[in-house]
Image (cartoon, rainbow, N blue to C red; front, side, top):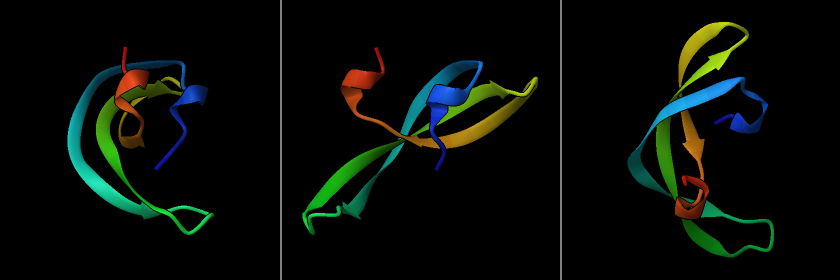
Amino acid sequence: MIDLSNTQECFFVQFVFDMYANLADNSNVILPVHQAKIIWNGEEREVNDLRQESDLY
């Protein structure tokens, strides 16, 4: 997974699956994984991204 905040452009974000994760406080959460196409260093790449639904819009 990468942090998409450093990308030049992000488009085509689509939900793929939910992933179980264990946080630093030892709590368990379900995180949605989305697939996105990004422009990074002038190249188009397909990446998986963890984000909350509220971050999409």
